Image (cartoon, rainbow, N blue to C red; front, side, top):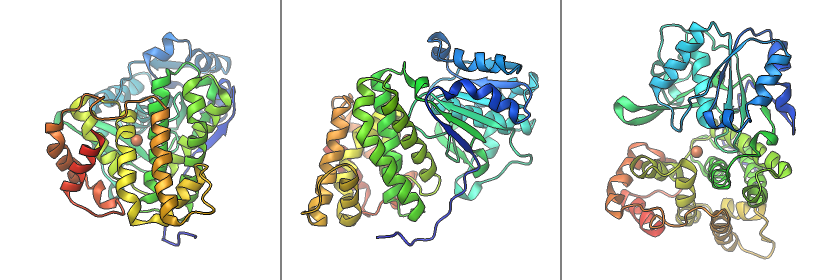
Amino acid sequence: MLNTNPGHFHNQGRLNCGVGLAATIGEEIKKRGCGKVLVVTEEILVKLGVLDTVTQSLKDAGLDYVVFDKIEADPSAHLMDSIGELGLREQATCVLGVGGGSSMDSAKAASILIANPGTHILDYKGDYTGVNRYKNTPAPCFAIPTTAGTGSESSWNIAINDTDNVKKVRAQSPFYVPVFSILDAKMMATVPGPVAAGCGIDAFTHCFEAYISTNGAWAFSDFMALEGMRLISEHIRQFVANPGNTEAGQAMLIGATLGGMCLSQAALGIVHGLAKPLSAHFHISHGTANALMLPHVVKYTWRANPAKFAKVAEIMGVDTRNMTDIQAAKAACEAIAEMCADTGLPRSLKDAKVDPAKFEQMAEDCIQGKPFFLNPCKGTVKDLVNIYKNAY
Ligand SMILES: [Fe+2]
């Protein structure tokens, strides 16, 4: 049944998708009349030679560039500010993010900062009500993901680690979406299996949470979310087993990009809400934290809308023809739990060495971030504590 809720879709970016296309980035940047390029990336990608394809392409196009390769997980506002300063010092006129969400988000941040000298990335923080805080349009930002996860190449969001206030904040605008991105599975061939697994489950979770969100989900986001879940659930096992499998890799990249698009339309919910405190307190990676919470949130939530969950079972390959919506919704719970288990990520909070004494505090943290209210199943802090207990 068509979701007739009102909705919006605004993405400014062009996507080129295909194995080997990362080698064309230099020509693409040149075509757009940009001068010096600030490349934002991770040291490991330089060491593994993954960046060589990009730098060679920039050289071949005759473009001047400077590389910043000190991106770490959860980049801080200070780091983003310093990349902006580097861009200004080097007189870069555009930014290219090559890497996972941290690199691409930092590149998006630098593109705002080099167009607005003297400002700081935290000047731009805000939720959906705080969009477009910049004075000058951000400099052109280009992106090449080397993981299939955050969907930063297509999302409005920049996740910022506000280390001074010990919280994660974000900047959001449709004009923060990179103007041009390349989805090339060749760039993911060296990603370690467990990273591929965590990123893939994160991408699936973006689609799933956007699909069930009570804030912003509409026909477009539903189409994208369902197709994203279908692609990821069909290919994640093969991709985790062999990240060099470019056919599975392209499917994962498209699924993650769809996730980035739909989370810009429909807000995320309690999987991310419960996962965030796990990362904050126990340094569990974002993807693993989502994988730990997802099966239990699904089990908690399906009762609110069995027909919607029945559709999830169908796109995950369950033969639902002779099932009631309730039976199919329960089958979706099993299919999602099985997918998470098959990726080889930790399966319980106990395995992940989480201290149960923190459950109450983490549940409170989740409520503070409000995502609980975007879940179709309405409950209390006690329900969130129970979800943690079930996941232990
Ligand atoms: Fe996420």
